[in-house]
Length: 423
Ligand code: IMO
Ligand code: MG
Image 1 (spheres, rainbow, N blue to C red):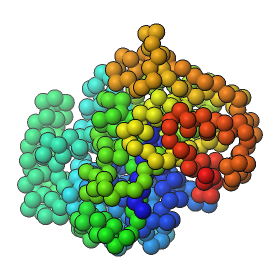
Image 2 (image 1 turned 180 degrees about the horizontal axis):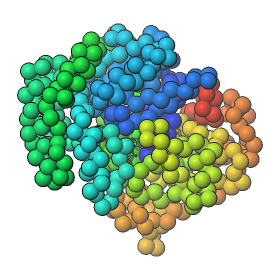
Image 3 (image 1 turned 90 degrees about the vertical axis):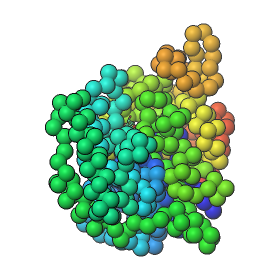
Image 4 (image 1 turned 135 degrees about the vertical axis):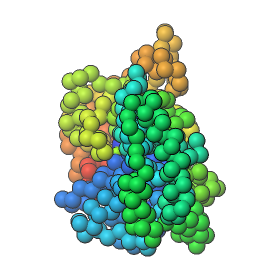
């Protein structure tokens, strides 16, 4: 059985926790897009782990983790993550981690460009500053440097020279910055090359051969459907296909080999960075839910913007992502609320919109149409069986399921591994 887990909102849906639980029963876990902009949190007992590039399943013994070709790999960030885990007693060895030979490498100038472009924009995206956009841009422009290039000093040197020739002009003329010298980057990246070499292979062949041998694979999505470069709230998105489509091009595994798509959603909505957010709370409610849900970015520490659950968004994500099952995360954050609202449609210029509008002005101008229902006003963290949830909580889940049109399979009611209800 090969399963994909994606986020169906703006990221931070709790994919890390879900993947950690599901990875217990699979052989391989594969990241297929994004880079160190992701922040997947896993809590095991008193230990809290945040993964940026490594698949969250790296904590499980005997499981193989793959960084697919669709990921943009920052070798510095990856090695820091691996070293950090080693210090905590989790060894990352070449038999456990495989990195795609054709994945693209994040360079120092990508990180700097990310910041400079952001500074210059009038409508800021609020990127994580990890160089993700510029690295993907170079991939598409065909001047990117791949992992395989990094392993060949002659190829790496030629490509780096080419890039610096062009980019340093850009740094000077557009940003009035002096740019980068060749030697320090070359020396730094040759160290990364030596350290990462044992992990690099053709992961597309590796994963497909594993599937041939009836191994099961879990594809770990990063970010969420509305950060998707094609289907998201463009331009306030990330630079990769975060929805199911990314699996195929980002891992080399054909859609015919995917059996199940699980979408993670929060019981409410959050967003980090800029961009339209129709169901965003007012300031008081925003502070309350942020405090209860600990809604601070796992990568940048920024406060997440919070709002009610938006079924217009998730319904669209379900269509474009072909969701089979939903996982509702962080339901317990709503425990104390007297009333809870669910957005079922938008109103714009006197008309009801049931579908996500792509026009920027429409998306900024829509008014959510809410259904209000009573809260359960009691803690639910100890519940392990669906039927033992308070009636109001079951009602909320069932109405949400009806509005989105996808069955709810998992309900998370706390941050610990075992705090989950399986329906
Ligand atoms: P996980 O995997 C939430 C957001 C940034 C910004 C936009 C573009 O933890 O859900 P980028 O640095 O990717 O160019 O920034 O995307 N963003 C995320 N928001 N969770 C994430 O990952 C995100 N990764 C990027 O805040 O608005
Ligand atoms: Mg996150």
